[in-house]
Image (tube, rainbow, N blue to C red; front, side, top):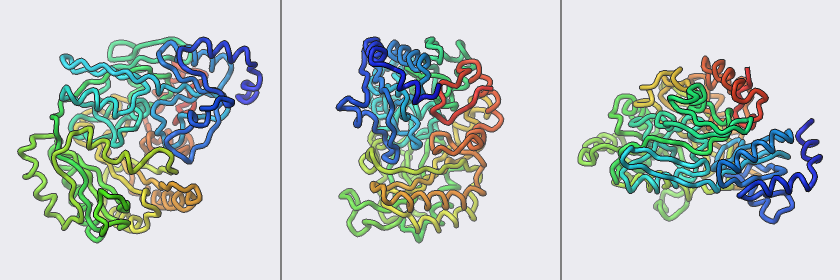
Length: 467
């Protein structure tokens, strides 16, 4: 039975029974808050599920998974809702919404952090920072913990402490048959291997157990902007520094149009610039020495780098990228950032189609290279960067322009890439691209998928088909 037929066959009695089985909410199309509840971060995504189950605990998740399976519904799992392709929402099916599951417990003695599946990274930062701990995360604090972690997790602390999955100690999750399991280095070890990079293919994670890494109350970080005329020189300097510098130092490179907001001097508004947003998590007494050559590479237009609490750094750009903008992503892994690629980057930086459109290169070397490419599902351990090109605009009428720019930019740079993409930054690009993201780990992932989800119930994701 097709999903649409299954939904139409569900009478009000069945829906009422499902609603009564939840401690949380069941939201349906006729409900007043339905349109708000179905929104996700990417305003380009406009889908209309039949049911949105806002779960408050693992029992609710079990009930929702069982209901979806028994009634042949397409299931989408939503944590923070940031996924660019909108994979946390679906048409006509069931959304298992974890956004009310926001509990966190920090054990400062064991340096462990238990995080429920609906948390965003700002929640984690708030809970861990008073204890001098952090979990390596992304770059926007409103990003969901679940989606970012299951795909790998790249952030300001990657060179010092590895990917988010390298700091994952275990998960509690609900499988396709409704069973509740724990996966870690001792229990369900194959499943634990798979969820470290394999995305949401294997079940619904209700909680994560992370190792908390020591980070001082203050790091030295923030963005430094250079005029586009210095982009080549700055980019080459940054590349060489990131490949050889201390692991305490991180910084992502980007091209941006300076937004016309108060934090930036009016003289620079709407100018296209190269920017590196730094995070140095080492001895602050050495920061001036480390940043001296950085500040000497070329005359900066704006320099905001300095002592800053890590949570403030990680939330710095939240206001510039609020929910509801139109997003289109293209991504690649990059091992060697060649001079030829840098020349192409500069050409397309001059064509940034909107204030929000950008290109970012995130370092994934340092501590992230200490894990073997087959030790977790994340396979590109030899790559040095994640490259993402995003066309972003508040106005849907501009989508053709921003999408065309993003796609063309990506096509020109792709020959200089490592060949695959980071699943957290992909749109719906087909099975070949999913396989390229996992390379020789894909076959093992497909076997584990067949064991834990043989009917591919969880297929609203960058899907790994059961072997």
